[in-house]
Length: 224
Image 1: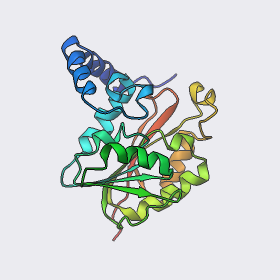
Image 2 (image 1 turned 90 degrees about the horizontal axis):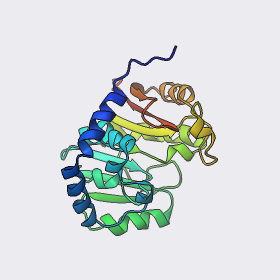
Image 3 (image 1 turned 30 degrees about the vertical axis):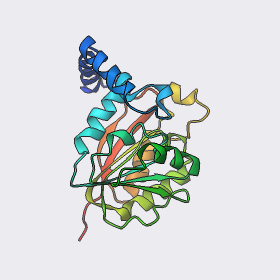
Image 4 (image 1 turned 90 degrees about the vertical axis):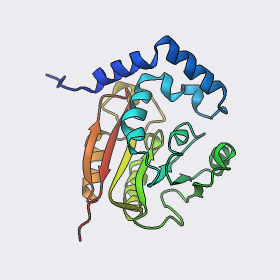
């Protein structure tokens, strides 16, 4: 029997009903009209897609702190970046120069954002033990597993003990992932084993919110 004892979808339903009340829809539309277009929103603005709105409310907004430093891997056009600018310092890390230029076009005037072109899995010029929150959505779903493992190795030095790391990854136990040719060969068991093998502590796993992927939140502990 499947385990149905979860509050995730109950929370999503309540959030969706509140978010889509008529006055809120009108206010949201006006705010969005005043904001620049961001690449990626052709798949839906975060607040308009219930699973993405849930991810935003559960895994992003509670961690935004003006005294902390964040790092985002693979910003795309910046639709998640928009919600991370409240950090004291935000590192935006991207392998593709074209995408880094795109997100810089929108956020380049902000003094608290540093745009970093990496070489695939590294974090050039980001100090060790400096990051309080690391987030990546829509990136690891496409990465081959050895690249994910390399990222997990390279994340460890730059995050602080107790930092929150939130990674969204492909879940081939779900039909929609198997139907998507662009999704990597990964699943919660493989991801869990890779995270734990590198000495991280898993804080939360979300296997139900997304229909083709899953989310893991983990941290590193100070071993001294």
